[in-house]
Length: 309
Image (cartoon, rainbow, N blue to C red; front, side, top):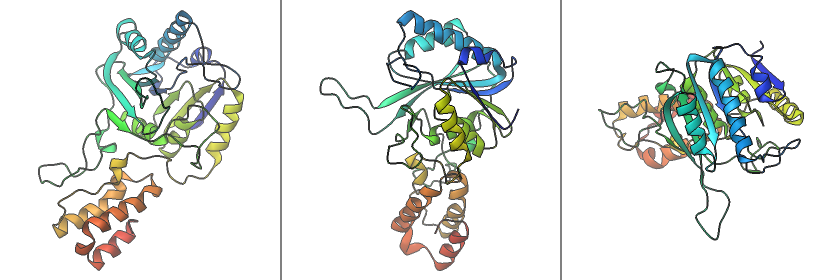
C-alpha cells in the first residue's frame, strides 16, 4: 500500500477489502442524513434504513480496527444518541470521550436556538489504546511553577472555525472539516507510520493531514468527482493547516522571569504551531503586546531564528 491509498466506491463494500485488526485509527465523518447533496447521491434515508447502514459500516469498522485502536465519529444531533447506542451497547466498544466541536458561525434561527456545534464520539476497541497527550497540549493561560509549561490537556470542548468559503483551502464540498480538528485526532490517537482509515473521505481532509504527519492513510469515497478533487489537493504544496485552536496562539501571563520567558518563546512554535505557519504572526503580535518592554534584542534575535519574529 502506498502512503495514501484512496479508493472509489461504497464504504461498506470497500471495508471488506481490508484485513481484520489492520487499522490503528478510524476517523469517520458519515452523512448525517439531513438531505445534503453530495453530487452523485443525496444524504436522505428512511430512519430504519439509516440505522441499518450505520450498524453495517460500524460493524466492519470494529473488525478492521486493531486491538489498541480508536475510532472517532462525527455526527449531528438528530442521530447522535442512536450512534452512541450502537457503538456502546450493540458493538460493545469502550467509550472514551464525547467531544463537542464548537464553531462561531452557523445557520441562524428565529425560533429556537441557532446550532453552533457538532459532536464527535470517541470509542476504543479495548481498554489498551494509544493517546499521545504531549502531542496535543494547548498553552497554559498562566505561568506557575507547578503547571506543566509544555501545556494542558485540550479537554472535550474544541473551538475551531468552519473552513469558510474565502479560505484558499476551501474545497467544493458541503461538509468540509477543518484540518486543525483532524490534526489533533491523528496526533492524539496514532503514531508515525500507523495506518489511518477515513471511510467517508469527502474532500480529503484526513488524507491531507496524514500526508503531512507521516501516517499511512486509506480513504473510501463514493463520488468520483471528490476522489479527483482529493487527488488534486494532495498534490498541492503544503502551506500550513487551514485552522488552529485559538488557544495555540495565546501567550501565558506572568512570564516576567527573563530566563523562563526566553526558554518558553524558543519552544512555543515547536510545541504548538509546528504546522500552522499562518498563526505565528498572531502569536508574535501577542508576545509584543504583553512583553514588548521586557524583551531584549537578544530575545528577539533568538526568536527570529526560531521563526517567531
